[in-house]
Amino acid sequence: MADYDLAIIGGGLNGVSVARDAAGRGLRVILLEQGDLGAAASSATPRMIHGDLSVLERRGFFLVRAALAERDIWLQNAPHLVRPLRFVIPAHAEERPLWLLRSGLLLYDRLAPRRRLPASVTVDVTHHPIGNPLKRPFGIAFEYSDCVADDSRLVIAIAVDAAERGADIRTGARCVRADRSDIWRLAVIDRGHRRVMTARALANTSGAWTASVAETVLRLPLPDLGAVVMSQIVVPRLFETDNVYVFQNHDGRLIFASPYERDFTLIGTAGAAFTGNAAIVSMAAGDVAYLCDAANRYFREHLDPSDVIRTLSGANAVEGPAVKRAARDGAMVFDRSRGKAPLLTMFGGDIATSRLRAERAVSRLTPFYPMSPRWTAKAALPGGDFDWTRFEAEVDAARERWRFLDQPQALRLVAAYGSRLAAVLGDAKARADLGPGFGPELTGAEVRYLMSKEWARFPEDVLWRRSKLGLTMPSVDREALATFMA
Ligand SMILES: Cc1cc2nc3c(=O)[nH]c(=O)nc-3n(C[C@H](O)[C@H](O)[C@H](O)COP(=O)(O)OP(=O)(O)OC[C@H]3O[C@@H](n4cnc5c(N)ncnc54)[C@H](O)[C@@H]3O)c2cc1C
Image 1 (cartoon, protein in one colour):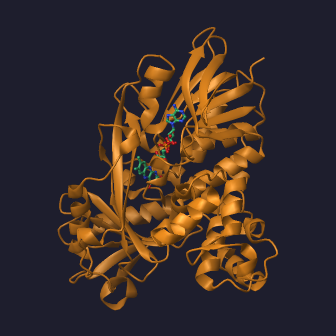
Image 2: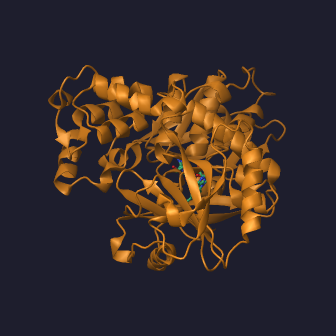
């Protein structure tokens, strides 16, 4: 008998989503991630959980409807990690005609199955706070509802749920070879040790590495793939309102600017073709200048490349001509050659549709194993067992219980851990009860929790993926954190 029913190569959003779905259906699952969970493309996304208006323009009505239905599911199942926001499109005379935008948004509202979020409206920005950061002469803007997620914490929460349902999640474990017969025999370098394991089915969810894993690890014909890179810049907060601004740049590309953590703004655009090593994706100086110029076209606050605090870049595979699935849904290829163990290859796709994608992928394995029915649409992620309309109430309750927390601290902690915050803070009565401090926010108790429950091994895992405290932590505290974690 094989050690596992399903082995998964890659611990990004796609890999952990497959692991969670399959573990919850009773399969014996192992997930192998060569570095940290979500450390590649899944922590460099624009963080949107949306139906995507631009897809509507290409008449992808069913895709938009499906993504909007998933948006509702995310809000319901991860109310701490997914936040509804009002998105703003300032109307620019040289861009899409106003009637087109207005009717597009009406349709967008109608495609949302449950309509739990406020509908779109037209706003006179000369008399509205959302116009304050904008250059003149914007007269009107369109405001509509969509959601923003904490992408890397979403990956972690999904992995935690998978593990609690029995999945074996291994970080620092690189799959170097997989031999296929009626089962898969995998060779893994697991934190320096070579291990061999067997599985009845294999999922290749290695993102931008999909083709190279197929070629060098599985030694199978290369899938016909391209790659796309998306890059964002983090700058000091450009506007006070809690809105996401969406602009069309002079070259037609859509630019978005959204609130990022408490004191920052994230600015990014749609992806561009990528060639190179997925392990070392970085943002070119020209791309940084491009995003600054685009922001300067719309915002009063002038941005210079020297204002950029951090760049985020990630690459992912996109389908070549042979893989014919819509990009929104990502791509999935299922290979069940006669007498051979099944192989699932899955890559790309939006955050919004990742749950559905994993559900469909695991369902492909039903002819091979007895498994329980689909379940993830109605199951909250760890910490997400409260209604999303009660998020503020959860923050108030946290301040009531841990009186030493100020409002921003409580907000950050509830947004990260939701109802599981008690597992981090315990019965602490004062901040001193939480162990040493690293910068103004991070405490020893939180670091211990992240190391014992969320696979954090190195300071970067804590500072950039389990939190974004790397944005504000002084270097002396980073050194103390490294010593503490070691
Ligand atoms: C930059 C970017 C921005 C995006 N923005 C959005 C957005 O705003 N909204 C949205 O809905 N969607 C967005 N998407 C789509 C979506 O977020 C991504 O498609 C998704 O996060 C990709 O997840 P993944 O699991 O396929 O890949 P990744 O997150 O890249 O994960 C692949 C993992 O496989 C691991 N791996 C590779 N080889 C091995 C091996 N041999 N052994 C073990 N592990 C291995 C890697 O270390 C990596 O962690 C974006 C995509 C990109 C590329």
